Amino acid sequence: MTPASSAIPIDPATVRYLDVWGRRVRYLDQGVGHPLLLCHGFIGSLENFHSWSPAFSGLRRVLIPDLPGFGETPAASAPHDVPAQARFLRAFADALGLGQHDLGGICLGATVALEYARLDPGRVTRLVLHTPIYSPQTLHPWFKLQASVLTLRPVFAIIDRLRRNRTVSDLYKRFLVEGPGVDRYDAQVNFDNQCRADGHTARSWLLDGIRRDYAAFLERWEKPALIVVAADDRLVRVERIRELARTMREAQVRVIEAAGHGWTPALIQAQVQAIAGFLAP
Image (cartoon, rainbow, N blue to C red; front, side):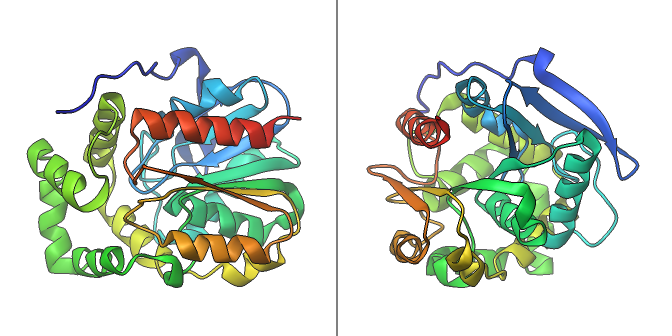
């Protein structure tokens, strides 16, 4: 049974629109202070941060755009790889007139954030990476196999049709990705996101993202960084993340026990507490 939820949806008063690359981009703008630019994960949207934005808005000005092809932002022309998403994110920051800011991302959104930081390291003051897919070596072998099979064109054509079937979607995520106990509101947000996502963009982003390697870049990173990951995550190898953090000068790692990739109420509370502590003065 899907658990009840006490989640509070995104406040419509905090949602804005901005023209970037000739397309209407939807984004969240909440709070005041030093900016925190966040990148949603694979087939995500700003709604995925419903528990983050109010928690951090007392510490930062939280900015979250829907990337091209996701949420309410129309897809861009090819390519749809990680560098293209990072260039869009930088163009978004430029359009807002952002100077230096904190930067974060979830899962494949963390991969985009890392490419952004690589392109413009002087602009980024600290990193917040949640379940980062930063290297092929950090991927769990089972997830790597899934991604390889599901992105084959004939297979993906079938998956692209089935992603709008709630029963099939829930079964796949329950047993192969997220595990049990996912917050009811988050489960609905995730399904809505995958229904409206652009399939071609999603496939290209996934194919490119799982091949990118930012391990050496992170080892050279000298500014504060927080890495949050669930102990039982099915996508990444937590021991690799621990090993990486030991080579970084200013890294903190928060491994949340008894949690997997799915956002359960307990995981949501723990990750919010960890990140808020990292952002606090």
